[in-house]
Length: 163
Image 1 (cartoon, rainbow, N blue to C red):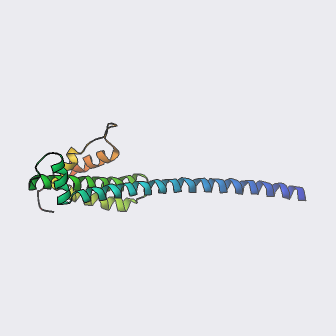
Image 2: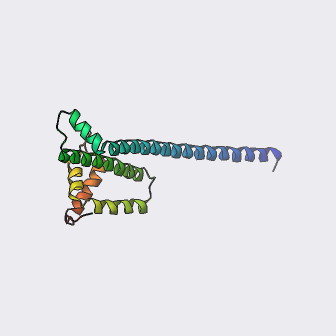
Image 3: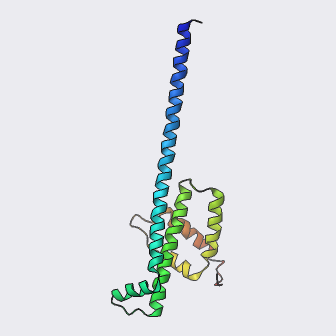
């Protein structure tokens, strides 16, 4: 084998190494983009959840009701607080569901999450909230279908016990 043949083989191997490096970098960029998007969505869910829970404070709920021209009775304040807590729960659960759909949450963790939701959705108030939650103009999301399935599964096991 001549020196020229060795140089040709070296160039070929070098080309393969460059191609493999480009593929690896491409996969890393894709993974980084996925994680960055997940962090952005998680931050959004945390901000929204925090805002709803803050607004669920009795004084703030009362102020909101009064600003709408309605007398803030204790019952109306409690209803508003529950609505805001439901909305916070909704966003938090949807974030976990989306993390799973994006492949960022393992099956074991998601299975545990799902089992806990099945228990929580036995609460009549929470069931009612999720049955009435708004659906976007684009139609029900995958998360809506997921919750709908859990509501159907837990319908028979609902026993109105205190949770």
